[in-house]
Length: 166
Image (cartoon, rainbow, N blue to C red; front, top):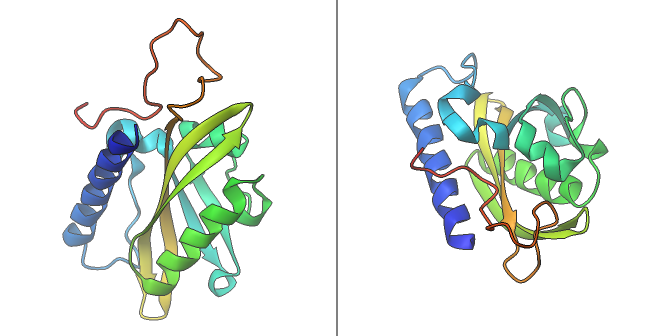
């Protein structure tokens, strides 16, 4: 499962990098989440608030909400439930301060299940003063050592992120 999560992360990073190369003026460029195809549901966009003191969620994908307590649009990242709050904030701060992509692996216990997660934070817009918006990606799959809480025991276990071939 972890290998599939990493492949999907690399694919998203490649799409993001392609967008950076296409646009010269990143301050006004708007991230089109639809460019990420089936992964759009695993993405969110946040606006940097008060030089990184917090992050306002402006767009929120449906799948990312499964592990983060539902649709968090127009809320601050600091208001998210645990465990997502601290770890997502940490990678956002790292991406904002370095002005480069940040990624982190995690294992979360949510809703009676254990999930392998890969979190991404990618600068989406900025100026010479710094990064003003970030694209967040949260890819996840049931941990292979624990049963998937959302599937019947007899059901085939499938990764909770779309295939990069689709």
